[in-house]
Image 1: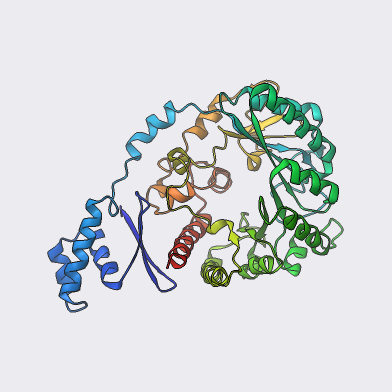
Image 2 (image 1 turned 90 degrees about the vertical axis):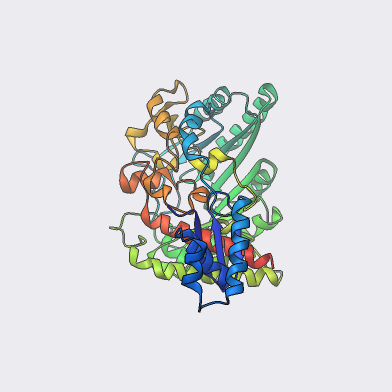
Length: 454
């Protein structure tokens, strides 16, 4: 199994040392020398292969530099985590630190790709009562151990359809902070239909982050995110979102869109959002069964790879012009990133992060809601099915055969368990299309770092 990943992008020869995370931008000679070293060729064999292609002195110098980097632990480093992961996972005591509150299983839009079935999640329409929400916050406090910082995301459906309960729960949470030495970080995801000045003012005071759902260009957004009677929602929400983002100084929010088979030229949607003035942008591929007309298919991948490359180049150009913006999927930390456990096991779904339905049922995350085999318990009685928690706590990049061979494993942390389950019926499986797109995004993100470091 290779210990480095070499690739060319936008005129750069890039080499990632997979296990240390070291990134090297190299010349053509070194790029080929490292390829030979990766194959296990000796220095003599490398000379034999490359002589006549490059100057002998250049090959010799490159080999010497690469061997020195290898000694310094920046090339061909061994994986120090695999042998320790089982003990690390079993000995690590996890606490619940985040809840996704399904404050409303109802929605005022009829998005074509909605995994939540217009907010119903395979069940009935419902709004969370204050009593259930209050118990959810109590459950979080009781199961958070000594952890002080806790996160609660108001999710749906559309949370603003139950706005009074959102406000009541924030007030209750603020009261409990003082009593239990906790700090609640509240977040909200909204489609913007009901957004108004009063809600914006409250969010700016109480919400650490707000996710604003919009898919990009008007025709794309209106096709995928219409009202139930078919009218588009773009003209209604865009001015509100612009005002809201500006009121937060273009921080602590992001506009979040989904691209599908119908808009494979999604870079235009990202740039459209940037041109509207948004600085924090996420536009992500739809995850859907290939029976859906909007699903991403294998044959779509070459076009999507081109789109990511084009977007990366455009982002570099705009950054150098002073018109830069953040694209969520290109945000990457090359200086260390998340803690080791996060890099190996991901988001913490099923262990540190749980979803709560309007009637208080607990699931591993919002994308498992309605999957009865993953019903874990409820906020009144707690987690009743510890075997589910154990299953998720044992899920990491080393329990997934495809991840073991993937250069991007420490950046995606094994990918989304829900996607793996829905495509492979196994949380230790891999959603292959998602993996290929993730690898491309990592390559582009590293290239952007290299370009902006010049």
